[in-house]
Image 1 (tube, rainbow, N blue to C red):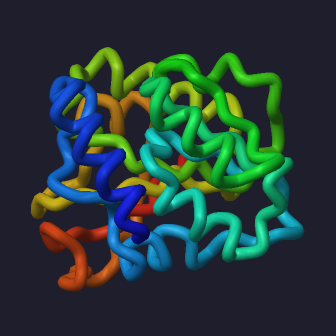
Image 2: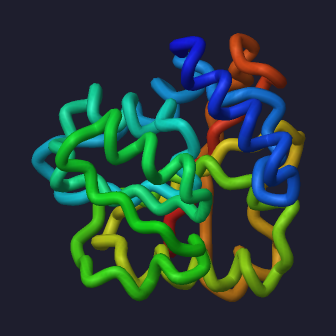
Length: 185
């Protein structure tokens, strides 16, 4: 990551600590795992909590065209950086809880950099219900977590009939993380 990206991240962390709970931007190894199953021929991708664009870059590096990537971010400073860093990217300054209102269908995956476990069950429900509205059959909700349990509460998993697969532990991230891929039964 460029030093200007890290400086922006740290500046926003200090200005808006209630919005940013990560210790550092996602590592390249974590981003690669999150985007490993994306296919440029399978439709658009929605990214939640785009931040400085670490995961965005990996999505684009996976061959997803900028016009087929929709990045949702609440922080205006991060939105400005995303627009300048990735021309043609669809940047939506909004809450991830509103992702189901995007005029999209046939989305192959929703890729999330959000601190989902620190959110209320209601907000998790709104986010995952939005995923269910957007994603094509067989599509995934991809979420990383630092903890040992699935990063979606049991109540929301049960309500939406979610199953999951998880990656190996990614030690080259600060802190180490694991990627979960949720889908509907």
